[in-house]
Image 1 (cartoon, rainbow, N blue to C red):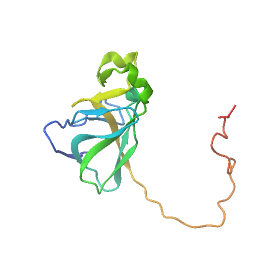
Image 2 (cartoon, rainbow, N blue to C red):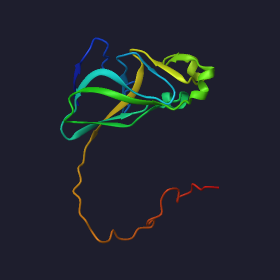
Image 3 (tube, one colour):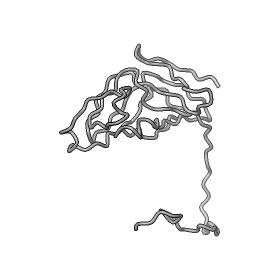
Image 4 (cartoon, helix red, strand yellow):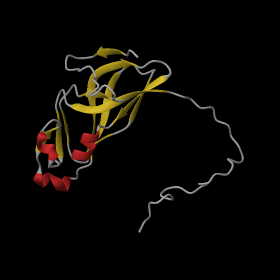
Length: 165
């Protein structure tokens, strides 16, 4: 499927797939951003994407950022009606207590292999998230008095094996 993309500034990088079989394509930062502990920032990609009707663009974390840093990319949905700049919402879950051992590190730095940092610098061109194009199915809602029985029933929130012990 072809997607129409508009570069909104000269720093925008066209998304890429790292591997031929990947479901998600990489999104790149088009600006430099500092994310301090306990803060949330929106990182601009410099791109607007024409998502076809009947589809959504799901913004997802990259596994390396999640496992090697205290940054958390928030899931997001870009609907087909949205024609503005794609932004990536990122939380820094580091606490201010960690600032005493502060290291300033960019995402592409190999430092992340063995360390975490409370203050993060995102640089132009850093891979910041991935996106997946997915079909949309809209539901119609029927109000009923009974949902019927199932094996699980109303058991939830850890009922299949997670305990508080």
